[in-house]
Image 1: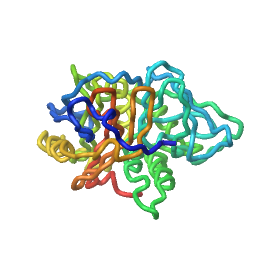
Image 2: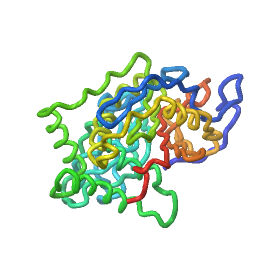
Image 3: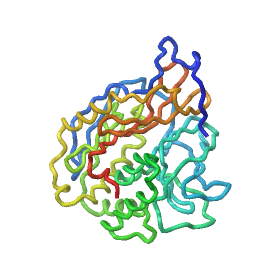
Image 4: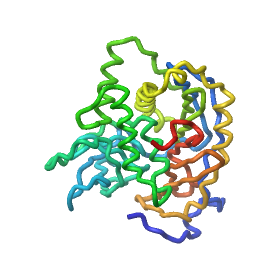
Amino acid sequence: MPCRRRRTAADSPAGTGRTHSKIPQLHVGAGTTVGPITIFPVWTAGAGRLGISTGLKADIAVSELTSGARVGNLTIRNNGKTNALLLEGELLEGGQQHRTCARDVLVGPGESMDIETFCVEAGRWQAGQNIHSRLARRAPLNVRAELAYAGAGPGRDSQAQIWERVRRFDAARGPSATSSLPEHLDRFGGDRRHRSVPQIPEYLEGQRGVVIGMAGQPLLLEVFGTATLFRRHYRQLIEAVLLDAELLPGWAQNAPPLPGQAARDLAALAGPMDFGEFYGGDVRRHDTMRSRNISGTRGPVRASGIAVVLPHREPEIVHVSYWNTNHSLMEAA
């Protein structure tokens, strides 16, 4: 479990004393239209090297708990030689049922830990199946949107909301026998290979994030601490977003592309968000690196992610998702 510890002078970056987590300045580029989706590249300032593996490059094993399988938890182990990042909304497929990671997690070399998950396959609980596969796939934004609210209040049943959000794909694309989100992604991938579909734009040099616009409104700004971390997840992110597009009503399918100013407005709201004193939260130690989950709100923007501190450096954000809670897709099912 994360441990709370008091910050000491040795923890502060040398000569600065600044230990707040804040995204560096954001720059939003020109948008590209992909069907009813508009994708804007995002760049940030920052050191650019963190020594973290992620996506398919991360050697993370996933299994059911040794104490007994539970819907809301899985065990992960980093078998690699560097710290590894598992993202919120990343799918953990197989086992007794498919799950999705509830929040960003950093796991050190050789470290094992139990993580919080949500089920994305309501109709299967297959006893005796223990090992999960990792394809580094992401849940569509329709499902990930609920993760932004998870734990927001005592009366909110996020698991029930996620099951309902997965059932939206059953209704729009034909039912899955087990209401399986990975099955819908598999089907959609096959569909894309057999019909003409818009091409996913290539990522650009130094790009670290995207703004996603849908139905004429900005929905998500997702930013990574380095261009390499971003590249490891870019295609999986956009492929999941294209599946989201199939849930849009006719008027939204034909909505004009998101204006660039609307994407910049979202970045202008998100950019100044201060996630507070790094050592004011629950901090995990990973050899020389320390990490903590971050969250915040500013106006209609709700954010969550993970930040780290390396020796003699200021806190740096590894990954953060900023959601426009005014978007219709953010509504509870």
